[in-house]
Length: 235
Image (cartoon, rainbow, N blue to C red; front, side):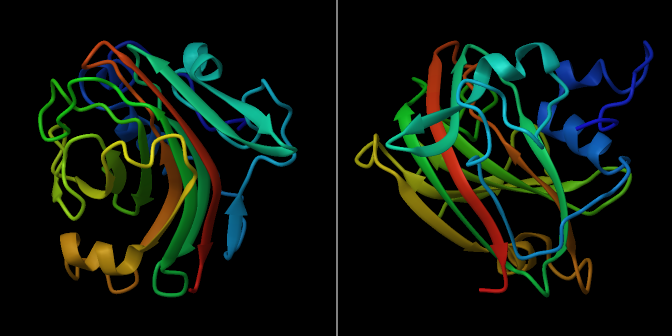
């Protein structure tokens, strides 16, 4: 997305994404970017993208590797996003804005293909995901996040602070490998989840964008997963 990632000078915030969290740095930039937002409800899909290419409308602070980890695939005439991370962590994001009071519900489909080995998302050393989706929430100068994950080891219903930052609240919404290789549909009431973990900090909280992250840098293994049809709506 043109203009989304400005140039950084030595000593600025850019070096810190190696130390902290790529999703955090992406969101910091996103919140400063000029806004040309579609109005909800909307669906982020890949039907108009070319197979084998990085999808239009998405970007990353790691431009060198984003196209190596994420690309569009086609099966049976249907296009979706494939993520294949080998010992690397590269988030990608799509800049959208919506009010959670008006449009609280988020739907999407995903498919776990290969799980990173030795994971435990509560610990920095095991904090890798076959599939994860972040909602970037308002808050300046540092945004907040809700992160939905498909965990290999933690039980569904587990909620905890990310080991990288207490401003990221992690929800385990699917667990284990019994559904590996199958498309699974998810639905979350983001407003209800926001109130549960952040309370009443804002009367009408807003979202600023969606981040996706399939990563395996901490375990040094490989994670492969697919994403499709990310939809924001009233119900």
